[in-house]
Image (tube, rainbow, N blue to C red):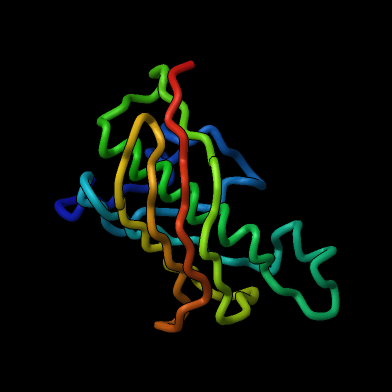
Length: 150
């Protein structure tokens, strides 16, 4: 891990249970371990989703942008709580509010995922997320997660 809290795919894989093709975070550029994380998803034309969405005009689905933001929120949650891989903590995507899509995400784009922790009450966590491509807002939302022990 670097001074700005960045970490690579190995640490992401140690924290998130997701695997290809559903792991949607490639690296973490910065994380303060308290309130914010900046992660990256590189969108490749080789992703299986583009065989059906849409073959002649490939567009990365909005629901997968939301999932990428939720995965980044999960990583931030692990860092906030200092949970270790293999712990009894599980973060579940409980809801999404105020989702807005402002720009299409296409093969070759780099999604910069910015997530901030807003509040926690009785195991329910709220995060704000934005997905940005080339400095332009692609998506914004409020992410609700439930932290459970398994």
